[in-house]
Image (cartoon, rainbow, N blue to C red; front, side, top):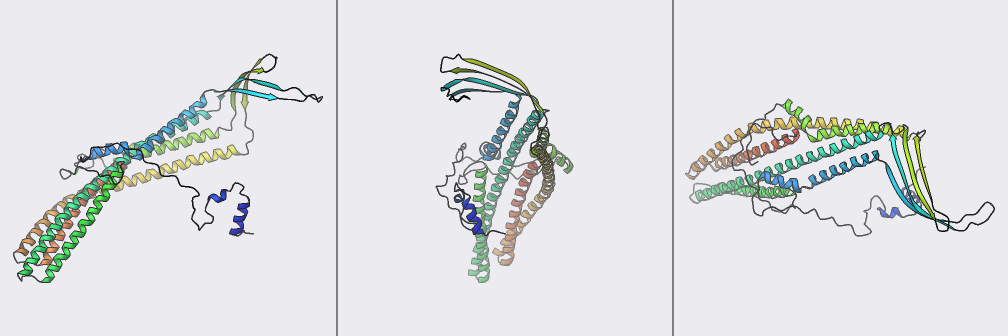
Length: 465
């Protein structure tokens, strides 16, 4: 028999003596209201400052980001925690010693019914225990913690690479959007020139009002494109500020590219890059370390149900509040601990640890396949973008010459407004495609480098690096 929602809620309320049900929303469709003031989000850690109003290069931005981006601090602290975990496991190889000081006051009754006066006992005591042999459980636990530390350090190295890639991508996006703004400003000036020429021809009776309307439409479209590109520029500026570890409203000046990039060739074949990624990518090696840590843990858990040999000892000194003399006591013993039945806990723990080791292997294989795809796609994307740059350069030169010729023909009374507008639109599109090809090449190169886990993939490369 199924309980209704109201009945179930009532039953839960009856079995809730501490009122924990009142700490959640009263029903699934209602919003939870905090009973007290919510904690305020803490202030982010103060970041280093850089010189105001000074354009920064990509290496300077990268160095600043590595020191101030929270991701690097997060991964570094995780590695330090893993290092402490190694120390925790190594502590089990040393004797465990504890001291106590006890004060007791008792009153007893004898078998004959006589009441013994109150007695006060006090004094210090020391106990010692040490595991002599446990079939390698402690050694495998230490091995597990050391592999986890190795994985944490490699994850930190990968976090540094990720931050560097994010800085490069944000930097080149900002540079590209800045170039796009300048290209749209030029297009707007060209559109204004066309509009002025159309108005003059209309005044002299050599053009119709439709020509003026078409020129005005082109001018308005150029204004819209410029407004959008300026908005994208500000967005990319805020993204770069966030990546380097600053508030998004912090203005950052960057040094633009001084010359067009010198496109280089990839120094290795795709097969070499795939092999290099497996050997040098920190996250792939970290995944392998996680596998070995899980395997060591499985071995430790599987041997936890075996006997262990321990040595124990202790000593104490007891004093009384009456005239009885103080006494000291000592003990030493050898203990062989033999687990007999734990309710199948050891069996299921060993099975769980083995499955977790196999799951770690599967996670490593997934990451390897993903890395191969990233290297493969980035390699051929870089090849495609490199070949497209030369074609966009030729396209821009041809479009500029065509637009200049069409403008001269129109200003001299020959040619149509449609031909002139079409030529200028093609010129503007060619500039945008050239900017996009440069941006794609830089971004794809950075993506290939982070996919391989290296930064020396090209025979020659240009740009502001």
